[in-house]
Length: 286
Image 1 (cartoon, rainbow, N blue to C red):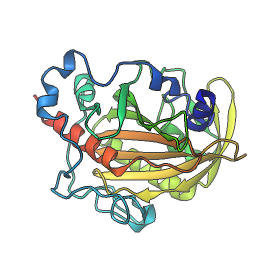
Image 2: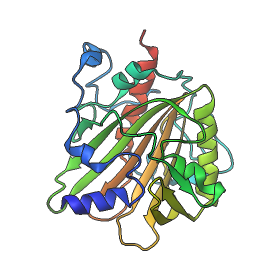
Image 3: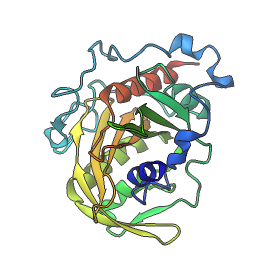
């Protein structure tokens, strides 16, 4: 079953981002020096309310809208994936703030959280697209994107039993900070790539190639702006990977989600919602 999960989640190109084995290793869900007193201020609040006071909901208002319907975030445009509304203006977080912002067990009911390895994005884990117009998609997975990350932390989230029917879901999460303005530029590029790139061949640093198809996803209406899409291997031998990037000021949260059923399993809005709020809160801390 572990092999099945790995193949489903990785689809051969996700390895450069976060190895699925991180789900069974790394820190449990939030211990460490940077967490002292933090849960009392920003953690364990659940996902019952939005930053603007609206309760998050899945369904027509929470995740079933097509990304081309537009949105209200600062990156909104003809093909905007949308966001949650008012621009948060959250500055780039440093390493300590990123660690404080990372989701912890208990933040969203039903999910187990494990912190990922410090070297989740080694410098050699590059990913290139054979079509320049598609490179922003590859940049979500590789270590040397056009807009460099100034810091990052990773985690894995699981829900349900991954070893038996009806199965569960596995989500790899990467929080990243960027130089001022770069996160907004990248999401604009990514939105254009998802809209105009139905597929490409990805090549990693070891010379392996994978032909991929890209399908635009639904609008989560979370964060300052968001882009969602589905990545499949063209041969159809692996389960699809649902990818969502949510921007919070000069920071992003990237989710790679799969279900053991083999069906598309996007990140739950409640998860993306609470992570967005934690990033905003971390940006307010001294």
